[in-house]
Amino acid sequence: MPIATPEVYNEMLDRAKAGKFAYPAINVTSTQTLHAALRGFAEAESDGIVQISTGGAEFLGGQYSKDMVTGAVALAEFAHIVAEKYPVNIALHTDHCPKDKLDGYVRPLLALSKKRVEAGLAPLFQSHMWDGSAETLADNLSIAQELLEQARAAKIILEVEITPTGGEEDGVSHEINDSLYTTVDDAIRTAEALGLGEKGRYLLAASFGNVHGVYKPGNVVLRPDLLKELNEGVAAKFGKASPFDFVFHGGSGSSEEEIRTALENGVVKMNIDTDTQYAFTRPVADHMFRNYDGVLKVDGEVGSKKTYDPRTWGKLAEASMSQRVVEACGHLRSTGTKIK
Image (cartoon, rainbow, N blue to C red; front, side):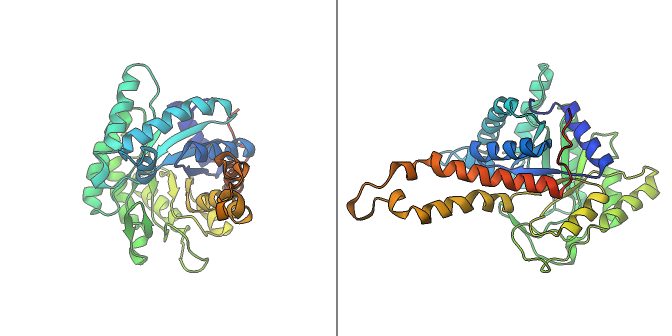
């Protein structure tokens, strides 16, 4: 199946919301991690989301120029070709983009997709994220309004983050404190500014104690039940039941119970990066330690080409990461839900 069309992506999200499951959104930084994600979704018989952060796009752009748009476009074009060989639907998404990177990342990508749509083609990406969590809510929503209008014109879904997620990702960091919880008033102001679908579809990354990166269970207080309060508060004012499509950020280390509660309360997308990074790297480290004399030319020897050939340890990395994606599909209840 190809990369999801705008119509298929909307159907995916509708199915997730109705079925109370969510799609893993897997961050990738290379063609190899892309294949690992695609393989995992295929083995789980789950449609899914592949996403590229600003840092990932810069890395993909090559260390000579570090151009984010070049990196994102190159991987997306590659994905449009190789995804044809996997029996699942995949949506392409760009992850966290703060205000100072909009002009060098999301806005050019939106313009590119708009030209494609005007030429009768599908957009290159199916959704983009605007991370205005470091701005005041008024400024955040003002920029979101502008981006939502552009996204709608390009048949793209916008993701917005209205309050901070703790920890650090790609240089954007927030302290772990009481500001990590979105209020009903925040949600109402978002609905007033962006509408509830009539101005364009958007995904809402509301905060319920989420923290990016690695943490041990118990170190972060997640309140996924808060999502129910946000939905009910907005529904009471606007008369639309379950108005939001929620995104779960900073999910590494979350308990299965916390994930289930989030799914019951409207989460349709959960970002996974830290766990898949480790899953990819762990077998590579194991290979290097076990084959020290082969991957290095120790004491004047010649080493072993079979052990330092990147394909040897690369296959191990891909297999390990793909299994972590399969596991994520199980946790998020998307296993076996692919659109036939």
